[in-house]
Image (cartoon, rainbow, N blue to C red; front, side, top):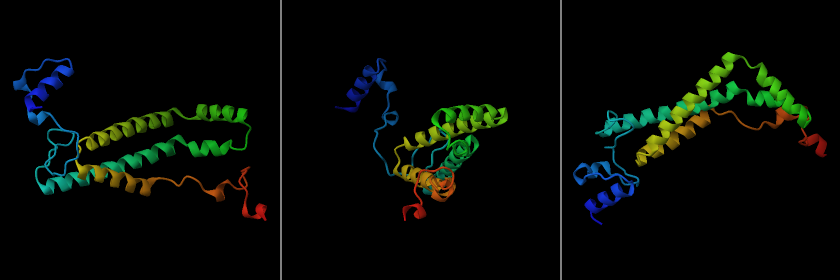
Length: 179
């Protein structure tokens, strides 16, 4: 297929009849990874055209990803999921639900507002990072992966700590109970 027939078929497939002189090759992007530094990112004004501008853009993207992971951790801390589950871990299933409802009801309005704002900000940054990846630039992709991984390593809490669960009604056997 030629570029002209491709433009006609894609315009017709979308149900819109676009004159061919309005469809340019610049606006038709292939969905393959590129390895160039001359790539538009999110906004018209964010278009690095030199290697130094590209390196600065990758540094900004890395910092955005660190910020996203910090937001994720902060959001979890505000919701106090671990604290609330530890408070009624030893209760029967029916009482756990009641205790959880009481805990949610006791949250202050300011904490709920803070949680909602953090969640909205996290979602916005998350979508911006997704759109950055959709630039299909390999440098941007690897920077996002490295930034999110580094942020997770810096800010995420460790999930399971056996020493803290012992003595609180945990059913996990300890070294002493095994022998």
